[in-house]
Image (cartoon, rainbow, N blue to C red):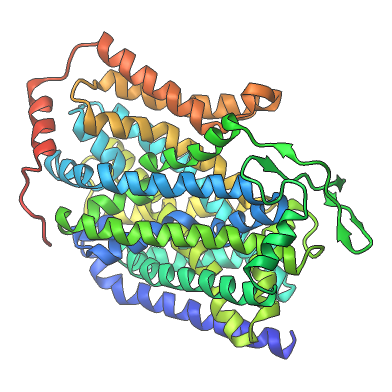
Length: 524
């Protein structure tokens, strides 16, 4: 390892040591009860709620996946995704956050999303809870794998280490500090990591723009590539065996492809996913005072819009400065790393690239903890051993956490995995499985238990059917699977609810109390 690479490595190791320190600091408090371990005792302040929600949501996808899309095929795909995500973030905080917080307290003080759904419909046999927990396990395992891919790509690109060894080492690191610190360690470190991610993006945006000759130079370069700087067109890299061709030192592009309204709606559908994201919804439940969610919403929205736009711009800047450096779709996701290495002092580059590590850690810890809690609280304690003690529940959750990590590592062994594609599938899964049901549960009193079950199953099934069977046909089926799956789930919930007996007076009364916000402020 060269001297410059060593400085970068040292900076990142110091950062990881700080994260472990946070986990150790919160270890004692986290282990006092399962509520503390899984949801922090509903004690989060507005800043921690906002920053930890967004950091855990965006993951390494924000610093690698999104800039990679912009670098590879230009503005349209990346910017419409960013717009959809920005709008989804704002609307979720605006209409879902407070209602969910109040409802989760009123309906049996639920501390997980499966808990909330089960309590909301007053079920005795826990079918909703079991289905929700199983899908959380499935999709978060895929999500965790995407995070491990990010870690492997980061360290192998930076230091030339083996992708597999770095990916496995990163997984072990995340598992260690999540196991010892639980939700409190996760949210505290996620808040710090949200700040690191934000400044990493801004620093690379500013230094990259300056190195490229200014905003005008970046735009002029983008406009010189057919469809690259077009909201309604998309660039088409000329590839042979997956590698873009280079002629006379310049990357080769074919004619621009159209990017019509149907494709735009498909891409913006990413925003629908927020209504079903457990890592974000859990933060709504965990805040100490629902009235503080207004401040959280403002913080989260500003963070998201600036970060997303910076990530897209970084992809365009990378294509200006290093047009032939990254010649495959997978390699394009390293544009942030390439810019950091070439534009910054090695030690400072290490700090900035800790933003990628921060993004990855802040997401993977959330995914693992929520998946583990779904099994331990909702399947183990809810079905298998109803008299389980808090200690037993936490022990089981740690076993499951490790098991999920192992499966995630196996999935992530493929070095050619494209982060954007892995994340998009898991995002669609959560969005279609839980998003429609969350909205109907919070805003339509007539929703029935049967409708809830049918909606979850139809949404999840349609994600798989559309992705694996229909989408490969192309044409009208080429739309992002979240959009049709979300619509189908909504239709099924509505139809089945109307066709079945209306909810009991107890459920309807509870709905009205949640709507009115008639709860006592929770402080623990």
